[in-house]
Amino acid sequence: MAGRTSAEGGQRMFNSVQIARRALAGMVGAGAMGGVMLFGGAALASAEPAPAPPAPGCTAADLAEASGTVGTAMAAYLFSHPDVNDFFTSLRGLPNEEIRGDVQNYMSAHPQVESEINGIRQPVTDLRNRCDAPAPMGG
Image 1: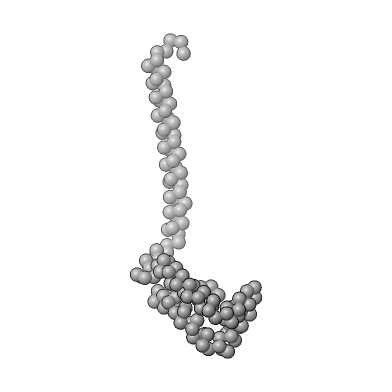
Image 2: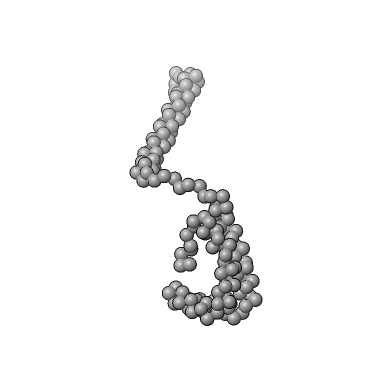
């Protein structure tokens, strides 16, 4: 560094910083362009329109609220009807096909219980019908 002034050293450092910034900006720009090409192309390839927003009262929060209300009411019903609670508890661990058949048989033999449970579940049924929402898997 003999013969160089501090001004020359400062200028070289300034140039180095500019070069580093340009290189970093180039890498970021290239990465962003690659992302646009990769993900933007995928969006164009699918060419599916975005789903329509849900109707008022048909959001996930509305479903969660109705489900919570029904769950709370169902728990109160089962606690106050130990025989029904025992029946549903006995289904635990059975294959779905067997559960479905057992529940149908139980409800056929106990129409009052079926009516009461359907009444408790009505808010979720109404919401699903109003909002054209699918029934839960297996339900």
